[in-house]
Length: 91
Image (cartoon, rainbow, N blue to C red; front, side, top):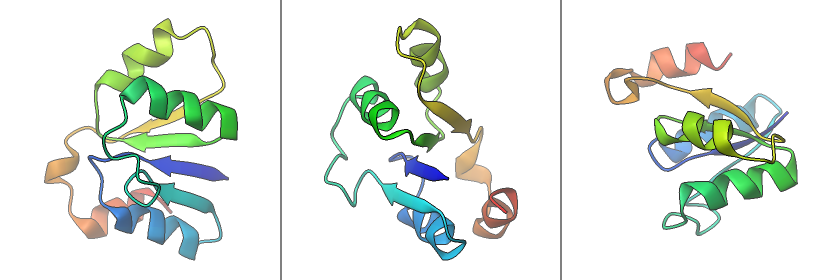
């Protein structure tokens, strides 16, 4: 699978996914740290990537977007999730 990890989550999430054989990148690795959420969602859709984020704006953006190509994994309370728990959730 192809993933695009958003800014609220650490780049280590993308690194973990790559270590498991997935194609994954973090917005910081691409220089997209200052992009608007709608632009990140659009880029993910064009690439066929699933967005992984803790940003609660993304479900609303997907709901109102005419382009439904992007998938979403939303970590609620990600600031309280330990690195170990995060890696278990991504297995």
